[in-house]
Image 1 (cartoon, each protein chain N blue to C red):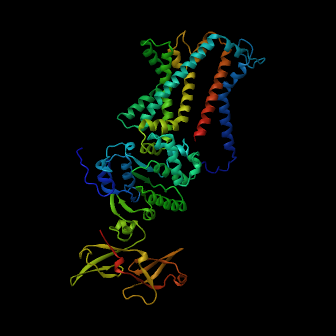
Image 2 (spheres, rainbow over the protein chains, first blue to last red):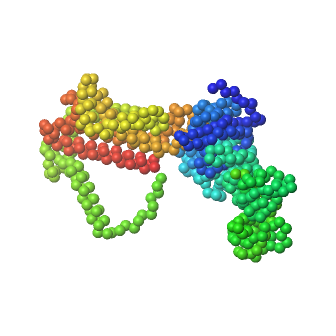
Image 3 (cartoon, one colour):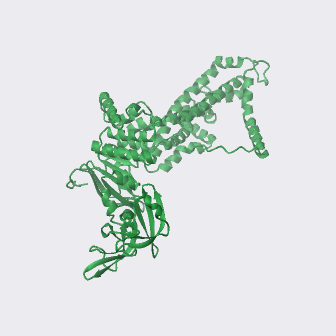
Length: 363
Length: 269
C-alpha cells in the first residue's frame, strides 16, 4: 500500500488509524483512532465485550484488523508479524514458561536477540533486582506465588526494553490487597524507567489509580479519552458517567428566560447554563455523590429538601440515600463523623449542591 | 483442572454391594485367561499343562535359545521402533498443523488422517496387501514399517492433539511477542511442553505395533515374520508351550508400558 506515514506527533509511539475488526456480522472494533505517546501509561477501560482486549491483540499482532492501519514509531506494522514488532506483553495468567527456570524465562527474549552469555547474566540479574526478586533465579514458576510470578512476567518484558509494553488485565487473578500493592509497584516502575505501557482493565478504580490517560471503550468504540480527572469529573456521555464511579443521574429540561438558558432538573435544581441543549431536547445531568452536601439546619436557600432513606457505612466514608419525592433519590457520600449516629432513617434533611459540579449529559 | 470434591459418604446399600460383586466378577472373567498363561509358562514339559506339575524356566530358556523365535522378536522390535519413530514424526507434525495453523480443507484432512482408526483392520490389511504387493514391498521390513505406521499414526495424532489443546496458547503468544519465530517457538516452547504427550503416544504406538497381528499377517511371508505372526502361525502347526512364555513376557511388556504412561501422565499433570 502506498501509505505515507502522516506527520508524527510529538513523542508518538503508536497510532491507530480507523482500525476496524469484524467477526462475520459482529463489529468488535468500529473505526478506532488513537495515539499512544512515548513514556505514557494509557489504559483501555471498558466492560467485557467493549473491544479493549481485541484492540490489544491487534497491537500484539495476534488478531489482524479487518481494515485500518497501525503505526509503531512511524512504521506501518499492520502486516508485520508479532515477532517482528518489538513489543512486550504481560498476561493475566502470567504465561511464564513452566519448563524453564525464572532465569531462563527472563533470558528468553535476550537469547532470541543473540546476546552474549555475560550480557544475559548481567541484564537478568539487573532486572530481577528491579522487581525485588533477585533470589528466585533458579526456581521454577510454579514455586512462586501469583504476585511474584507477575513481577517476573513484568521483568521478562523490561529486560529487553521494548518500545511498548502491553498488559492484559495483569492483576485480574490476584486478591485485592496484592492487587493494590502491585498497582503502585507497576506505577513506580513506569515512573522510574520511562517505559510506555498500554494497560487493559475492566476495573475503573485501577484505571484511575494508575493511568496518565484513560481510554474508555464501549461497543467497539472509544467512548471517551482523557486524563482520569477529566473522565471522572467531566464525563462526556451517560455511559462514561455511569461506568466510572458513583453518580447521580437525573433527567432535566431547559428553557430560555429573557435570553438566559435555564436548566431545571427532576430533582428540583434550577440553574443557568448557556451551553445546555435547547428547549424541547431531553437530556440528563450528572453530579457526583461527594459533591453533594447534607444539611440539617441552616441549609442554603436552594438546598433540596428530602428524607434519609438508606445509610451505608463503609468505614472512612458513609453513603446516604436521600429521597426527594417523585421517586427521585440522590446519593450523598461524605466522610464519616461521630455525629452520624444522630442520622437515622426518616430524618428530614436537605441536600446542598453547586451548579459548577453539574455535568450535562446529552443523549 | 477440576479439583476432586469432598468424597460423598459411601453408602453400603445392598444394591451397590451387588454392583461391586458383578463388576469384580466380570473383571475376573476377562483377566483370568491371561493370568492362566503365567503359571503354564513355568512348566517343564513340551506340552501345555495346567496346572503345571513342577516349576522351571525351561520354556523361557527355549524361547531365548531357539533362534527363529529370537529372529521374529528382533524383527518385531525393529519394525516397532521404526514405525513408532515414523508415526511420531508424521503424527506430531500433522497434529501441530491441525491445531495451530489455519488452512483450507482442515476438516477433510483430519478425517483422512484418522480414517485408519475407523476402517476395519481386515479391510485395511487387504488394502495394504494389494497396495504394497504391487510395489513389491510385502515381506520386507519397509513394507511392514509402513503398514504399522498407518495403523499407529492416528492414535499418535489424537494423543498429540489432546496434548496441544492442553498447552496454554498464551505461552506461545508470549514467546512470539518476545521475538521468537514460529520454528523457535516450536523448538523452545511447544515441543518441550508436549514431551510427556509425545512419550505416551510413542509408547502406545510401540505397543500397538509390537502387538499387531491382522495387518502384519497379510504383509509378512515365511522369511519375514514378526513375533505375533509367528506365534499365530505356530498355533496351526504345533501348539508349542513356548507360546505361554512369550505371552507372559508380552503381558509384562504391556504392563510396564502402561505403568510408564500412567507415571508420565501423573508427572505432567
